[in-house]
Image (cartoon, rainbow, N blue to C red):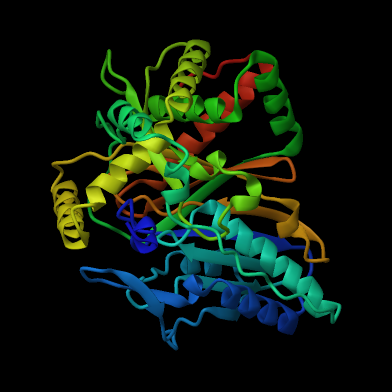
Length: 421
């Protein structure tokens, strides 16, 4: 399987991952534009488009004049402008696959958006760090030339670490979906993308991390268990059933850091059935389920399953995905809720040499009936964000899920267990 297939393994098409950086002051406009263009030129995939065919591939794109790869937007209403910007779709068949905007009001907000066909969260953060470093070089009139990252972007090198028997066993044990459940939606029609977020401050999240360490839980354990508990608060599943939540794993975990490809989609998803009960039991059950999946290389199993599906050829997979989308719109298929821990936003992303107020990440919009949430951490603060279709899912429901999850997390560190909403 060639590298290009690796970017389309999950049927991702017009989904975007966003990194947002809010400054305390205004940037040097010329230095930032130069830094952005140098960063994108160093990663040619960001400037390409996807070409369908029996041998699908990426090729250079001619940006739409109405949708340049970089622009400065002056606005008196930064939040509304950002909301409109995040709702803009990107068609990979037209390209380019990156959109970077500087929103200027009293201060500046940098929005780095990249199509999920070519990258996961790690790649977006890599581009953010590169832009920051190039910006400092431009401001200080120093010379910095980005080094091309030659590492393998496909699953190939990771698969080589496992025998055929190990991959086969992981493939049989861990499929991406065995059960189906999703919170109720108002409509199955796609609407414009919208986002809701909630942030836990540094002191609160520090207490949560310390409590997790003391009790032997990982932050992923807490995120997944509180996500399921929050879903159960808002939309309880049927008695004696579980919430089959999907969660992601970055397969770079199997590689040494010096072998990480900077821009690639090496994140895969697998199902973790969560039975809701008293919060402490739910956390322990999730911890045990995740330990089983990590020990059994669930990520390798998920990747192997994806490769087998795509071994049938591009058009066969496209037809299958189109059929699934039609059945979903007709209410014949469900779509399990999804949570991703996008990890820590590194200090390098904040290293512009000017004060940064905050930074956070936003996941792709989950189309109905799906619901997805992502967590990112910056300067000790945890941000939970959900992307959803306005009109298909009520804003109040999304806010309730986020608020309930935040309360369950806070309750874990204090010993108080919140009741349902």
